[in-house]
Amino acid sequence: MNNKIKAAITSVGGYVPPDKLTNFDLEKMVDTNDEWIRTRTGIEERRILKGEGLATSDMVVPAVLELCRKRGIDPLEIDCLIVGTVTPDMVFPATANIACEKLGAKNAWGFDVSAACSGFLYTLTLGASLIESGRYKKVVVCGADKMSAIVDYSDRSTCIIFGDGAGAVLLEPDTEGYGVLDSILKSDGSGCQFLHMKAGGSKKPATIETVMAKEHYIYQEGQAVFKFAVKGMADVSAELLERNKLTGDDIAWLVPHQANKRIIDATAHRMGLSPEKVMLNIQRYGNTTAGTIPLCLWEWEKQLKKGDKIVLAAFGGGFTWGATLVKWAY
Ligand code: UT7
Image: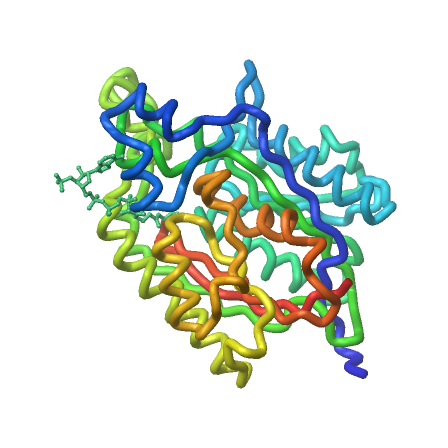
């Protein structure tokens, strides 16, 4: 018996839009081909949120409603909603505020976290701290991105990677040792040069010139990011295992950010995990940025068993990266 309050994940919800964008669709849009995309990234198709005025909050809402329904709670019971996203509905107010209004979560406060592909790990650690403080009983953390809003569909080096989606988990207090056990989060702002959006912030507000120069889209130096990601995600996952005196044998699942299958394989290899223990849905959804990890939990929920030790790992824009150890609670 461990009386210290931990934040247990007690429900999971997810949402991916119905419209698919396949590698074959992309072949008609840019100079690429299915074989190149599959072998270099592992991606076969992604989902795209279509519809006038639909935004990231419109994916957060169904994901949160699903987790409430599964847990048998009303959105009114949510104390706090944290959304990890780099594609907020608006620069302000926060997507979390907009989503709470749409959910009828009138008793919740909330905010957004900008940590790109590590958005879910950052929000999970924050949400867990709120639960561990003893002040909050139901915190929802969400990773959600409408990447199609910031992808240049004439740039073959980025448009093949990204997709849209959202996933969310409910955190509740647990005193029996289940939940978020440990987390190592890192950031290095020198990585900004390799992955960013040039305009639209206070440094370079939107003008006709920034629009004409396509500066409101993702800028990525793929090879440089790849190099840092392979090392960063594998190193931090190994560090987390070592710090908790665990080996790959103790881990039931690796839940990796889905950016590139080759980065995932390198991380699993470094942790001594066989491929059957790695959650992988990149082939169907591509890289949904903050959405990837909770969407994996959503899809694998039925296969998870109470007491399973799982490692969540991510690397992305910032640079931001990290790994989190969770003991599954149900
Ligand atoms: O989640 C956020 C963090 N982001 C990441 O983790 C992404 C990390 N980076 C990557 O996943 C990979 O770098 C990419 C998938 C983006 C690119 O793969 P790569 O193996 O690094 O390719 P490359 O950029 O080195 O390009 C190799 C070749 C080039 O042609 P040349 O110069 O060798 O003739 C590219 O022009 O492939 C060409 N190329 C393409 N060919 C067909 C680049 N994109 C494409 C494409 N289709 N879509």
